[in-house]
Amino acid sequence: MLIRAQEMARYVDKGVLGAGLTGIDWVVESGLAVKSVTSLTYAKQSRTKVRWVLAVPEDSHYQRAEDLANTTIATELVEVTKRYFAAKQVPVKVEFSWGATEVKPPTLADAIVEVTETGSSLKANRLRIIDTVMESETHLIANPQAYADGWKQQKIEQLALMLRGAIDAQGQVGLMLNVQKSNLDRVLTVLPSLNSPTISALSTPEWVAVNTILDESVVRDVLPKLKAAGGTGIVEYPLNKVVL
Image (cartoon, rainbow, N blue to C red; front, side):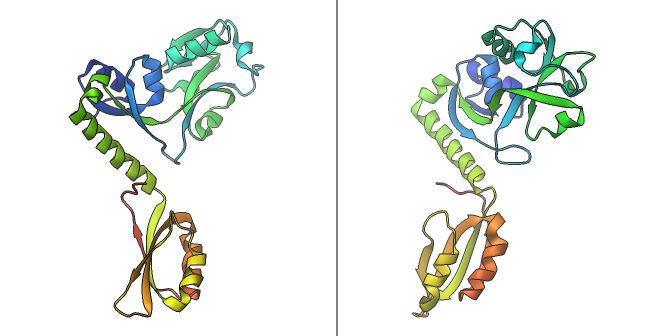
C-alpha cells in the first residue's frame, strides 16, 4: 500500500499496517513508539542521509539559531522544530508549511527548516544554512505487537534482509573472468573486492575462473589492468542484491 511517508508511523502504530517504510524524521515528528527494524541509507542523488536544516535569507543578519528569537519559522517538521528551539531556549513561532517552503523568506517567514540533500534548492532561492536540525534516512518500521509475534517478526526480518541487499547492491557490479593459474596472483593484486574473490576450477587444469564484486566507479580503470595481467573472457554484470 502506498501512503505518504508523513502518515506511515501513525498507521503502523495503530496496527493497521504491520510494517512500513518511512523517514526516521517523520517517526520522530510523530512521537510514536514504533519499532525501527533497519535503516536504509539512500537519497535521490546519492547514498547519503538527508538533512533538515535551518536556513535564512542569505543577506540577513541571522548567523545562529539564537539570533532568531521572536521570529516566524516555516516548516513541515513542526514538532521537531519546536523541540529544537525549545532546547536552545529561543522563543519562536513555528508555522506549518504545506510546501514551497523555500520561497517564503523573508516575506512570509523569517527562516525555514527544510529538508535538503545537496542544498542546491536553498541556494537557488538565496537561502543560507546556519544549522542542521536533524539528519534522516529511510527506516523499515514495525508495529511492536506485530514484531513480537514470531511468525510476523520472521517475515519482517526477511523483508529487511532483501531491502538491505538491494541498497547494498547499488553502485556495485559483479565481475567474472578466466585466467591461467600462472597469472592468478597478478590478477588478484588488481582486484579490489568486497571480500576475497571466488576462485573456481575449470575443465582445463591450467585455468581458473575468478568471480568478485567491486564498485562500479572503478570498473573502467580495473578492466584494462585485468586484461594486461592475463585475464580473459571478462564479463561485467549488474547486481540486484548483495546480502552481507
